[in-house]
Image (tube, rainbow, N blue to C red; front, side, top):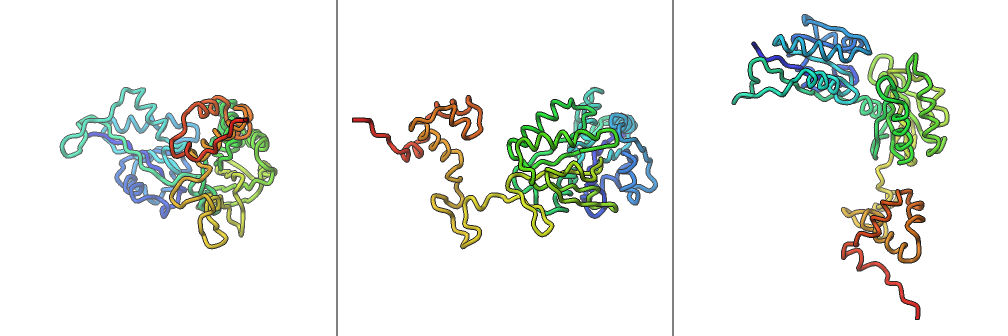
Length: 337
């Protein structure tokens, strides 16, 4: 029997022009296309003459099972996801189904062809929603960011809430997936409450619905009022960090160059900073200052509170010897006469 193949294809935001060449080729190569009905519509002009299997929103495992069954018949299957198949997409559920069925990656011959009866799996990446939505509003993800889904269909709410609280406290830019649906209306309000524990009410927020699609909408708002905006399952909510700004209709998170360079002047490094080297407040510089402050009388507990870090982490840092380059520059405290 001819080896079957499952191609987990991320189609990006949906338009053909934003799809990778490999994604288009995988769809063209496939005998069968499987996907959520909305995603099938997005690639309608690429799938004429192929077997089409349409599934509803909550039938992810059914899609994966259908793909496995057809691959066992020797067919090439394109299982499509919007965005990236590995970011809240079909890659994870499909591998779960495959592992449960006892699947292992097929042995390839000298020409790279799978053994007869084996099922090859390829993950074809695409632009995720956070990439597409960020591109539509400016450059909000230029510094550290994370993605959190507000869907509690498969994840307990306390788990989601802990992640929201930790991300808010750590000053991440956050992309909220699945923020609201017809039945799930309170989750976005709870997320707002958790963020307001740590962030200013005027923190910039961008809400992008159906990025790069016909009914695209973009709303700029703030953390204080974001829950009042029009938000649905096709929306992605981007919450800025403490440095994010909105100017001229663009949401931008600075990368941090102003910490080291005179960006408003001649671009020279600030005193005590060197191009290509860690900040003076980077790890080694911070450890040096930590030891100095402790030697000057600051307790480990007060240092933990000052830096908003766990006490055991501060304790461990204080018990680790400093590199020679650091200890050489620590001021020596004079002993009392």
